[in-house]
Image 1: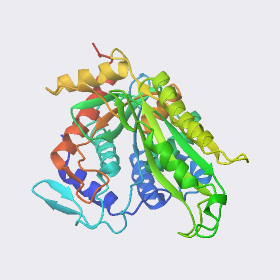
Image 2 (image 1 turned 135 degrees about the horizontal axis):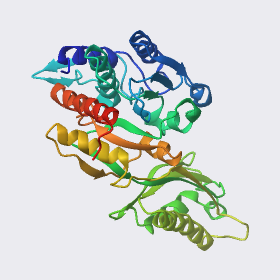
Image 3 (image 1 turned 135 degrees about the vertical axis):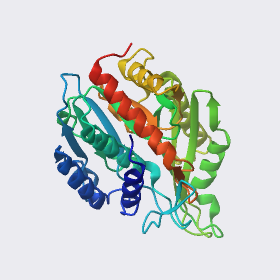
Length: 379
């Protein structure tokens, strides 16, 4: 039933529209045109203004043909770089770039799949529930579109985000994360003439980092220091260092413990270097980046997806992942979002690829989910 040629062509056209984060306007306008032609009511929120982008989150609503609870479908419009001037190669059923850019299957595959599902529904006059489509911006730079989304624009309390790899899996658990910024203030001095008058911020940072337990802490918890910058020249004792890191865990208490441990270690090490002044001084900034996702196995979103998969002769395995997605933000707003796979592989690399058969499989599953929901027969 899926029109493979149309799906492939639409995916290729979306991928070849540049849409780096904060630059999604061109692809949004194309989506708006297609959705409006389908009969959807389309609008935008004001997220773009709040994140400094040229476009906001796009919302499209279809009324449905049956009296059922509304369901949302979502994907993000932005891509990572290098993502300008993508040239799509298609061979043996596999999409790739020419090797100089990413492909953009993350997440242009979702856009194409969702539109194909709606096309099939209308062409075949299939009963379907009210559907609310949310195409977000700036997912790749901190889930900003979802964070600034105007949730009053949708009525759905559950739905599906197409932003994973495995077409036979549904993400039910994802961690919470804290952003951590450590600023170390020392004192500059000439490193040859009077180094003893300086307070070396890099030395403090190095000592503290050496005492941290980084990487995988346990099966639920990780932490990482990702960037460090400081110093001016080799002949100046460095007076300032800034470190950016993160901690993630599926367990909120563990997240707090790991975060506190990082901050406390820097504070403790700084005390050992104290001179007669208040230096070195530590400033720690901790910000929750996103909350965790934990969807119960008996939630209707999971039962519905499993029923649909069973109808297609598939099994749908619950997945626990270590990354965050728009689903984390939706979940924090009381909206349950199961994350489904589209088949994309090696995302965020020049080797990114996706098979058309996997996109078809994903489209068939989403279509069947809507059909089962419209029929009201989950069990």
